[in-house]
Length: 148
Image 1: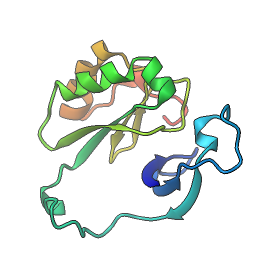
Image 2: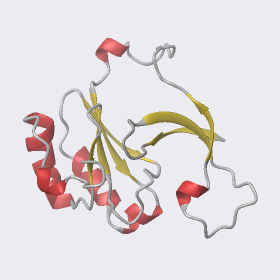
Image 3: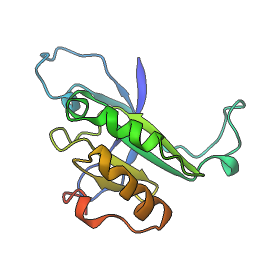
Image 4: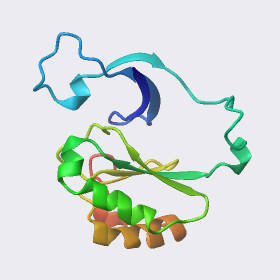
């Protein structure tokens, strides 16, 4: 079963890639990002789903909260719930598969500006929503230093 996932490498922009999550002769104790094998790199440019609203009516921003094993152990479910409790027009909040930064979570990525936040606590979510999403100023103290 394939799924679309976000991947980011140092110095390069986020890419939407299709990955295959089936293990291929790899032990169970391998880190999650070693278990995926990239099959097809694609850029999403066309809109073909007839049931979804046109691209012009879709939200322009997206907040992704990692919901993989390590981030969930560190409270990612509560962080996701906190973002969903503070809806903002034009912004979609959703859980994501592993973002590849295990141990620094819960990880949050704001798209399209590709702003990464690490170790986000539920009580910090209103600050991110107000200062970054509404006022347009990223919260510098919470930024993930690896990418910012």
